[in-house]
Each structure stands twice: as structure tokens, then as C-alpha cells.
Image (tube, rainbow, N blue to C red; front, side, top):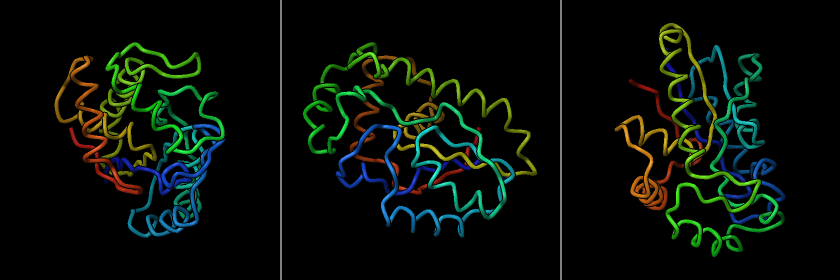
Length: 194
């Protein structure tokens, strides 16, 4: 029995699809198939956490249906560092210059807009969720918790779980390198250990 941390299945954003907002991005047909396949690989769940973003709900749905559960929403959504308003109705390729500009700054407090998140806030969200899991981990010795989240959230979570790191431009740079060279794949999962 364990706490499983799971990245959502393939979404329209992953394949350069045009998207309306960070939160409303849906799974592709392949993503829905990946979610159905994933549920055959996972044991029965006792509790399920999802982010408020649609793609985690859609990925979790086959498991929720199988185990007759209702998911609880936690602040484990993707790192939305670009303004949602500016990104409306754009593709990944169209956002690439903005992405490159953002990461070239390595400014932990930079905000792309009032509806964007700073790296500092993202870091604090990840630390807070890790503390939550540490506090409840012994509740899941005989039960399973499934956490459906996002690639960036899970990558920083893993980095901070492996080694405590202070918030810095260096951490931000290392995180970006990890995302580019060792991303967490769609429906990839791991078990939380501490």
C-alpha cells in the first residue's frame, strides 16, 4: 500500500494543440486511451487527489469509476508561469518565444502577469504538498492514495524530495534543465518514499 504520484495522460497542450486556458486543456484521444490503460496497472485506490485542471480529472476518471470514488482537489496544478490571458487560443509553438524569455531571466519572483505564478509561489506550493504527504504517509500503510498531477509539479517535487534545496536562481536553472532533458512522461508514476 502506498502513495502513488501520477502525471496526467497526453493532452492537447502536449501535442501543440491550440488551447483556451491552462486549466481547460483536455486529453487527446490517445490520452484517454492511456488513462484507460493506466487504470489496469494501478491497484485499487482508497483516496484520489487531482488538481483543478481538467486533464488530471480526465486521467483519473477511469480509476474513479472503477473504484467508485470521488476525487479531492489539491493545489497540485501545473506551474502556470505565463499569463493565462496572453496564452489563450495559442499553441505550444506560438508560446515558445515567451517560454524562452521567461526562463532566460531566472528570476524567482518574476510574474508574467497578474494571472501568472512566480517560481517562488510554485516552489512553496510543492513544498507545502510534500509536507502534507509527510504528515499523512502513515495513513497509507494499509491503503492506497493516488495523486494525479502534472509534469512540472512532479519534477520539482521529486527534486526536492531527493535533496532539500533552497529557493534560488540555481534551483530554477536546474529545474529547467531537468524538464528539458529528463521530463516525466504522460501517465508515468512513482511511489512516494521518505
